[in-house]
Length: 166
Image 1: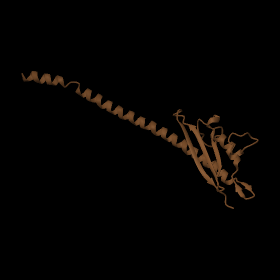
Image 2: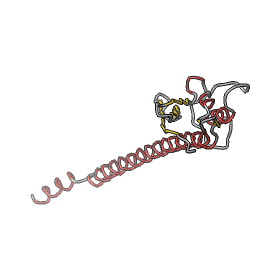
Image 3: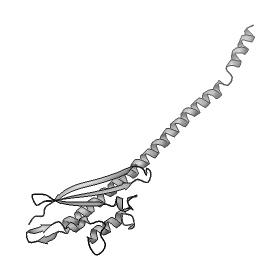
Image 4: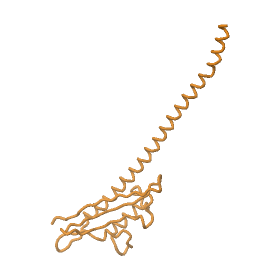
């Protein structure tokens, strides 16, 4: 009688090692998929950070050029308002601004380009406002669309006030 009881309990345990191995494989696979998802997110965040830092660098580049290239007036120095003309032809506007806009649009490989800034609606904008105290406020705005998420429009805007010392 005890031999029949032992045979029944032994048969009920068959395949349990295989089932445990399959569950362990399932848990391991879920962990690997999680790590792959985290890596993809990290890569996307790194690319977004790169485009933001490129935008900051390019905006600071044109502001620095404006600081070093003022117009000499009778009362001293003033901001060259032709910098605000980004889409001007070669006969009017500022050559530095046109070169900067071309660089952003990717036709110049000197700096990494910001994707999505190829049409006229997404051109960089520069606004120069004369404040009452004789200080010029300059706003530079960049707009781009990330290649990994083409539906999200990113903007970078920086504002600075320029006053030249006599």
